[in-house]
Amino acid sequence: MQKTVLVAGSHGTIGRAIIDTLRCQGYHVISISRHGDPSDEHLCVDMTDQGNVKRITGFLTPHISTLYGVIQCAGVLHNQTYQPEKNLMQLDEAWLHESMRINVLPSVVLAQALSPLLNRKSSVRWISLSAKVGSIEDNGLGGWYSYRMSKAALNMFIKNLAIEWGRKSPESSVIAMHPGTTPSDLSEPFTKNWPKEKLYYPEMTASRIVSLFTSMTASDSGQLYHHDHSVIPW
Image (cartoon, rainbow, N blue to C red; front, top):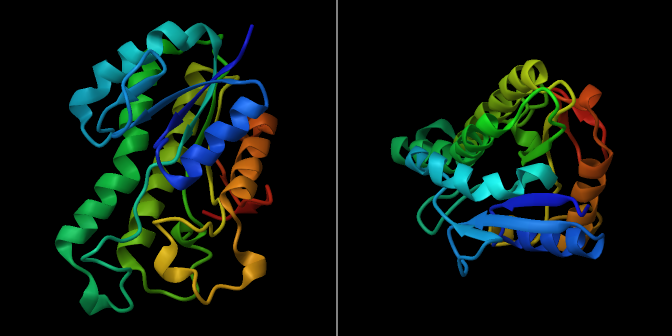
């Protein structure tokens, strides 16, 4: 039976590359994003709105018997108005709230939609794309307040979810992953002077994510992983 993978945030640069990679490897892919044409395999929905939990559950229900796992890619670093903060005085309440909303809630809402469909026999893999800068222990530079704080919050959610689903579905695995710096709308302002050897194009990034996704086990759950599969301290 063909395995199904859900890619959420599927219309971003990395999300699209992950879908292509999974399909090339023979997986059946379903997707969720705010954009695209609705179908049995694609749900257009705002994953930051908790009112959509039941709608997402309904979308997932027909696929649950073949669901191999979830890769959640939605997130934000900046927009046309706000850039990552260089110092404390640039920290803006409205942007902090927006960063938390977009970087944390999609994983929360999606997990709330999937959780009622899981049982002790379930073996579901889950990756939320996070960031190394969300590691408190690894932070030696400061700055980027909103992004760091929101990714640290996401990391705590993933740790909590790994514990809860570890009890509910012991064969499941829940991790966060730093995908590396990839040319995209999210990273574009910060890649001009970035070392070429540390700039990973979407196809390479997707390959690394899918490689970790397909190799992860229950014993890996509750960790933040680098794209090279090493563990980053929380």
